[in-house]
Amino acid sequence: MLTNIYHHKIEVVSDNIDLQGHVNNLVYLKWMQDAAVAHSVEKGWGQAQYDQLRCGWVVRSHQIEYRWPAFENDSLEIVTWVESFRRASCVRKYEVHRLSDQKILAIAETHWAFLDLDKRIPAKVPQEIILAFQADGAPI
Image (cartoon, rainbow, N blue to C red; front, side, top):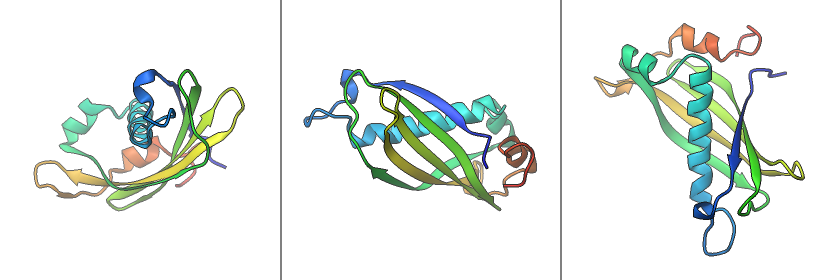
């Protein structure tokens, strides 16, 4: 069981709402990225640490399944965790929960590639990054 899960709170504001009266699908992408960055910072891997390595993460693909709409003034929680690492990439999973009724509004995953920022080519994910996101020291 994964215990290295990050919980990111969101309050839906009017700017998140589209012409159909619910949260626009592009907003979910921003929330997912915000949650991933906040989780990384919590684990000690903020922008300064990545800059020092001259490496960073870029998105290869997103997959989102929308199950229920979110509306203005909803309180949400983005739950995220790193599911797996490969040599130069990882898969991060997400669930978007509405707090008032605990409905899962969306499930998603992002495939991230780890890049050497100077050469713009894939780089091996350092072991210290992998260790930071492991669940209770168990291998991912």
